Image 1: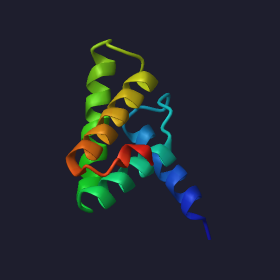
Image 2: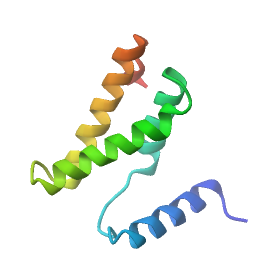
Image 3: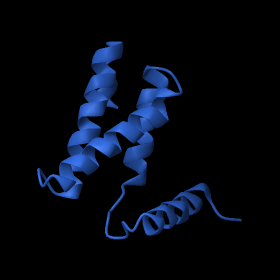
Length: 95
């Protein structure tokens, strides 16, 4: 039986291949961490919403040539963490 980590890595590869994004490096642990911060600091359904919007924003920035993929993703995820912290007043960005 596969571990959760192996399953997530396999699923991530399948998604990237399906969307023809094989060259994209996804930090699964960082995405899960952001989802956890949003879920525990806002409400659980904020997790997928937060990660979707951060990913969408990163994609737009990358496609517009504003930054490389990794820089766009780091900036979008950092902003999302900051917004969670400001929204809740919990300092969630320190996680």
